[in-house]
Length: 390
Image (tube, rainbow, N blue to C red; front, side, top):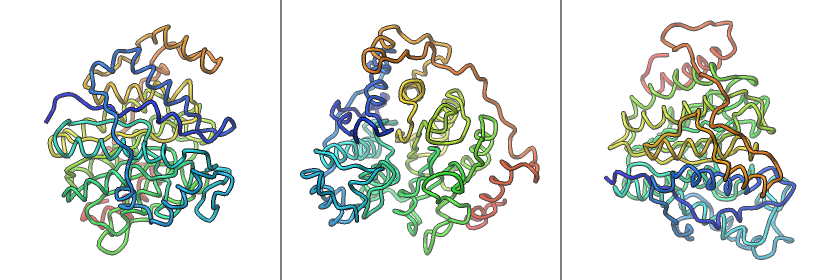
């Protein structure tokens, strides 16, 4: 196993562009890579550009008619077929959409292959994490479901246990759907409650079916949940599940839209808590996955200057075993880049000034507390199916 992490990057991923008025601004990717370089993290990792996912790889998850529809919309955006979720407000069609979407998918698949084959212990694709795409349709700004494709490729290569942990503010519905009946994959999603946020799925009672019953775990968090509750929920659910499942590979999705500045959701999590969960995922990979195998992906995040670049730069640093000190002053060269690209002033430090802490679940819970009710609902629904105590 190589000692250096891989960072999957191709400048062309910034072509994933739904247009000027769309919240998923590709500048967030360019600014993240700029900040990675400003801190010298590109010298602490192997920067690798994988090939786009080909037809046979895409069909590990997506239907052939859907791939054909994406190709057609990519060539002629004005005639995108909305029956496949293309050409909609959420997923406008644009020229070259298939090519750049398959490129992003290829980076996640390449990350999975590198980790499985021992070329690296950790691989990061912050352009990925597009977890809403379904086998036969686009959804929620996502054309191809790169996390599901990465997991499917691991299974194709012989993996028998893959754990997927999703901490995006939105439910990881597409990944859950892809492996709903597959006992080889454990999906865990912590997200804002479906009553108050897209995609209105991810209820605790969604636990998988058939041979995969108990393989889906959902923690639906109350709107307004902040650092202490978010971290409490994560540590009350994820470590115990991973200790029981013992995945050969841990795949994690780190959407930055849990942040209190994010314009599309209603959690109140700080950058410092996001960093704490990234560090926890890294530690859990080393503790429970074979040889620490970890694939870390990006995801949502629509505070594209203040939050996303800092969050995912922390992710790269943690994966590289070269973590960025939260008190670090951000290089002026990057802030100049921010202003040149966006005419906004960039943040000055790699922290929101918080010191995250939480009360461990094993110290007891409050049945009247909404956060504790959410955690307990998840544990009661899923844990007994896995032979675990609630």
